Length: 94
Image 1 (cartoon, one colour):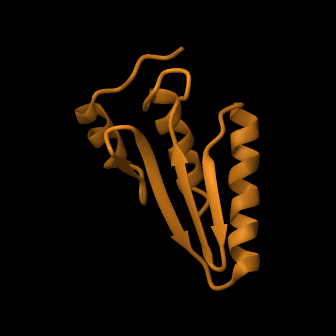
Image 2 (tube, rainbow, N blue to C red):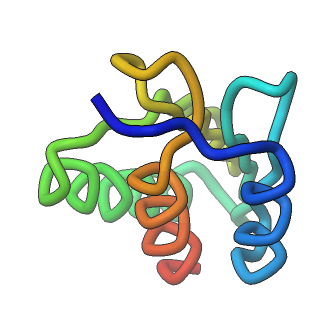
């Protein structure tokens, strides 16, 4: 189990991570738009591969031209440094 980050620490860290926000004082969230379903799926597959590498998995939603993600450390009940690191890597895929 990892230590939870404070809301202020999350805000500071996310200032450097495009597209991600701290939602409901509980998790990180992001959404990306793509020109079609295939492009959205390709992005999701790359993001999922990162999750596998980190053995830390986001909740994803796939729709035509859109991918949404929520990320938090389930065992800690909120956002940890591990979540911010993964969010940063996923953001770098765009």
